Image (cartoon, rainbow, N blue to C red; front, side, top):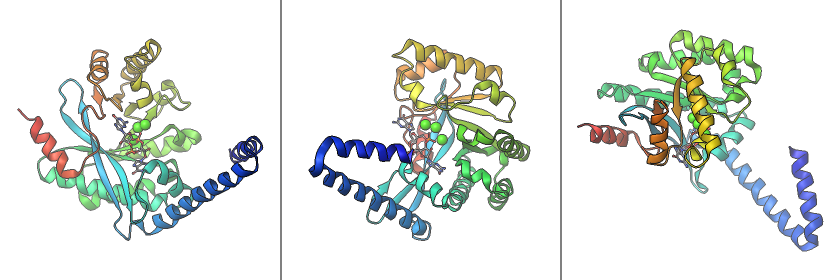
Length: 288
Ligand code: C2E
Ligand code: CA
Ligand code: CA
Ligand code: CA
C-alpha cells in the first residue's frame, strides 16, 4: 500500500509540474507532522485525562426500549482538539499503544455500567476491541479481572470485534470461546464489509452479528441491498445469533428492519453517542 501511495504521489508530481510539487510536499509534511503529534499526544492522553467515553444506546427496534449501549472512545487533545477514533485508533495500533488504551476503555466502560446497575438500570455494555488486543496472551484473564474488580456480572459485557480478528481463525476462535466460557458475549462488528461469511461464524462462539451501516444506508433505496440485508437477517436468525443493525438514521430504515425481523438497532434515529447521565435521562423519558 505504501508503494502504491508513492506511485500515486509520483504520478501527481508528473502531472502537476514543479510548482505543485512544492505544494504537495508541504501537504505531505503537514500530514506527517499531524501524525507525529497524534502519536506523541496519545502517549500522554491517559495521564492528562484527555480520553473519555460516550455511549450510544442500543434499542429493541419494535419498542424502542434501550437495553444496552456501545462505548465509543473520544480524545480531546489540548491543541488538536477533538480527534476522531477513526484517525487515532490506527496510529495507536501502529505505535503499540492500543493495549494500554484498550484496557483503559474496558475499565472505564465496566465501571460506568456497574454505576448504572447501582442506579437500577441493568444495561449491557459493548466495548470495541482491536485485533491486536487479542495478541495479549492474558487478554481473557484481564477482562475477567476488570469484571471482578467492579463486580459486574459477565453477561452484561459484550466485546465487539471486526472480521480482521479472524485472520488467524483458530487462534481467534480459541479466545472467543474463552470469552464465551466466562460468560462474555462476542459480536462481529461491521458485518458484510470483510471476507467472512455467516457460515464461517456458525462454527464459532459468537453471539451477535452487527450489520454494517454501509448496508443500512441503502436498505430503503436499493433493491439489491434490501435483499442482501434480508438474507443476512434470516441466516443470522437461523444460526441463533442476535442481529443488530447499525447506523439507522431514518424511520423508513427502522421500519424496514422491523418488518424483516431484525430485533436490535442502533443509530442517530434513536440516539447519537451521549454522556452517561444523558443515557439515564433518555431511559427515563422513554418510560410511560
Ligand atoms: P464502529 O464500532 O463501527 O462504531 C460506529 C460508529 O458509527 C461510531 O463512530 C458512531 O458514532 C457512528 N454512528 C453510529 N450511528 C450512526 C448513524 O446513525 N449515522 C452516522 N453517520 N454515524 C453513526 P465513532 O464513535 O467515530 O467511531 C468510529 C470507529 O472507531 C468505531 O466504528 C470503531 O471501529 C472505532 N472505535 C471507537 N471507539 C473505540 C475503542 O474504544 N476501541 C477501538 N479499538 N476502536 C474504537
Ligand atoms: Ca462497534
Ligand atoms: Ca460497527
Ligand atoms: Ca461501522
